[in-house]
Image (cartoon, rainbow, N blue to C red; front, side, top):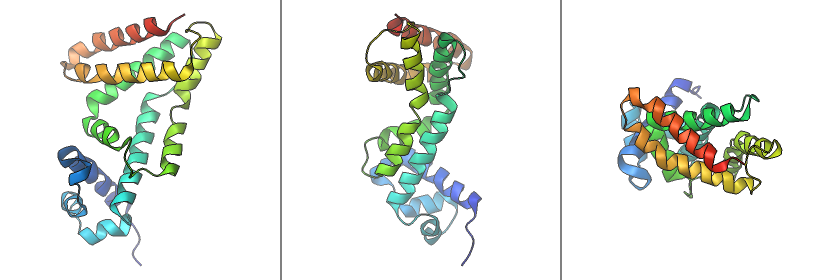
Length: 188
């Protein structure tokens, strides 16, 4: 049996991401993924037993990369950590449109296994811990942390495409403004 090539697996995942951006989940075919990745269709099945398995793995890896880049609390002053999370999210959206489209389509998809959902949920722990720390330090409102997280997520998600359309030189001010608005809404 041939050994699997990590580069080939990454090429297949990258091709899947691009295909989903172009045709959506419903239009995705293993043949199109193979063509875009420059491999035979059978090769895709060597790496991923099914379309479901391919999409589930891609979702897990995409979400893990996203959370590793965005949801980091260095334990420093709360406001700085809060601002870094908001601005990192905005930057990620501006620089990773294919990933954002894919995560949005997959979020409530039947392709995602419960194990993957559980693993993805672990990724938001730093944000929840940051919000809890803010409440404990009486810097953030004493309201349900889930509500705060939902407010923050939905606000930044709605604002991110606006910032992504700005010229790069104007994004810094936009990012700081959005972070300030979110902070003002949640501060005690």
